[in-house]
Amino acid sequence: MEAATGGGLTFIDNAERQRFEARRGEMVVGFVTYRRNASRILLNHTEVDESQEGKGVGSRLAKAVFEQLRGTPLRVRVTCPFLTGYLARHPEYGDIVDGGGDPARDRLPQG
Image 1: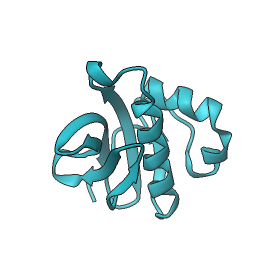
Image 2: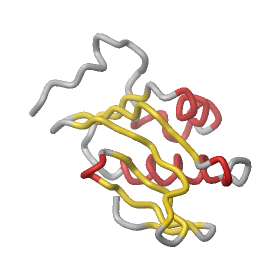
Image 3: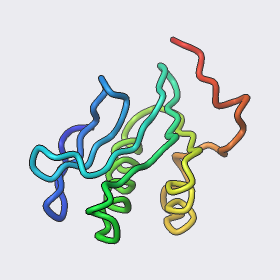
Image 4: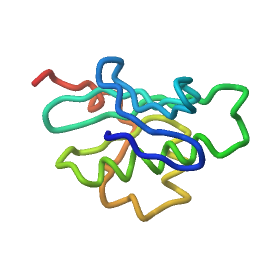
């Protein structure tokens, strides 16, 4: 993800750590971890720094992630409960997300 900004936050794809990050300056205040191969990305965990809870960081991060993924050919799978809840409230992203939650299907082959 290219750096995007919103509400004093910057959103980046830290591919080395396999996570999308929300940053305030140099401080990571939230992230979404993922596993990715050539055709699919699995979003499996969201975490927001305790000091930032209740400030909309998670929702803004989720929006930034889904907006970025909308522009890619990747199939998107979600097993993270926070992101699943976000999607339930934001059906506009339903077109880019495959069904979720089947652990056997969530094992990504390398390639």
